[in-house]
Image (cartoon, rainbow, N blue to C red):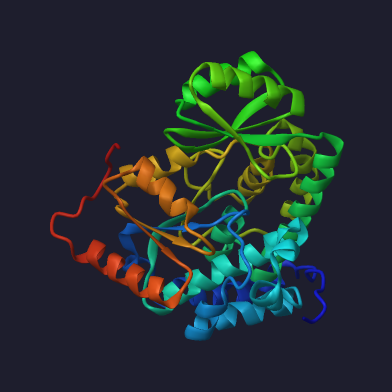
Length: 357
């Protein structure tokens, strides 16, 4: 495999405006916004979904996906080779994981766009939120890769300064987990994944106390193979350091609604508020259950996960059993997703307007 380079520094906002428009056409298609399917949302996979060979099949089958990987290699040389040829150990390194997952997410989304799929809204889980913002035109690919790299570096620094970990709590409600985390101390619920799965981040001692409390309540606590207490106050330093970069990047108003992890609501259309919200994501909880329910309440019935794996598809099915949830990483899955989207467009009596799960 060839050498992997660092992400190139992004150009100014003015210098990337034309490129951003071209990429928006690649991702969202040349159709006007009125062509968006009001019942479809794309979900962008996050860190942890990576695996050797990810993205190769969709690259070979889709010119649009191939164009994304080519752009990824221009922004960060060697990215596609890492995705296609890197082993599990190489892909597990955060400095490699995040750009490779980012590129694969966007390649799969571009393959859908090539087939005429235009979603009403998008969301991404943790790292996936940066891919969702890039997909929607808030950042160019160059800018996105630069932000992904800096975010990973700052979060690693925060991990070194504040050692910790994460535990997934199963079989207990989020409210019960919040109470137990408060009793344990030095830990915080940070990923509200589904009604029966909440991830808690904290110090080693705090998580040990929490694990015992969960066991006594009849729940199950599973340690996660991560290097720090992500999305918690332990990452406050990363949030503070990332904000100046985001202000300088020159964010643009997204061309589709992007639902934010930290608020479970679409990003504001003020670029300063966007920068503050994206920076805060590193040290605030991922409100994934509320995000899915919010989209459902606005008429989304079909959720298409793009990128490696199918974790988010499973979370949709556990949170919204009546929804359609499919994933796209391979050509066969792409065909299935396009059929599901078409069904959502043509189904008689498809829900519209505000709803509540």
